[in-house]
Amino acid sequence: MAGPGVQRVPSDRLELFRVTGFLPADLCAALIERIEAERRPSTLADANGDAAFRTSETCDLDAGLPAVGELEARLFALNGIDPAHGEPVQGQRYAEGQEFKAHCDYFNPGGADWDRYTSVAGQRTWTFMVYLNAVEAGGGTRFKCIDKTFQPQTGTLVCWNNRRADGSPNPNTLHHGMKVRRGVKYVITKWYREKPWGW
Image (tube, rainbow, N blue to C red; front, top):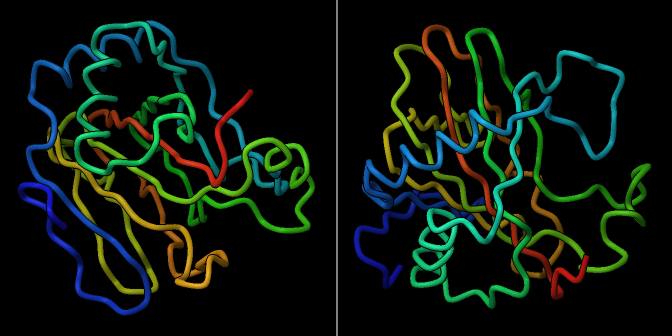
């Protein structure tokens, strides 16, 4: 909350924040260019049999790129989280009709890939997501449990704590990357872990 422009969504069910104008338009454009160049079909940690559950495309963003370095520096200045606990930055691209159905970012204890994804760095703690562009229609991020939807705006950051106060996963972080109705949506996502990344 000490960061400039940070707004907390009023709720006692989860810690959820927004920062408008977090990234300048030129940095957003540089990140979009990289996503366009290196995108691939998105995947799921635990496949659930629904081929339409996540239909976006993903790009792993090279930490050595100047645009990614600037993004990482801005994130650290805001959140103060040890960068060693961060996963590599990902970019996502949603074309018309694509979505990511309601899900939580933490790994489900007992899930098919629990050991694979948590054995080294532990559970996910925080999610930081930045919209890189505005969308003509659709493409919002809806937190169903509190009936709150964020619409894509260039450079706006949305972040949330995936845990409750006792450290257990918080199911109230369930969120839906809603279908893009017109245009293309670009976002970046940065997840943090309990332990240093170490992969």
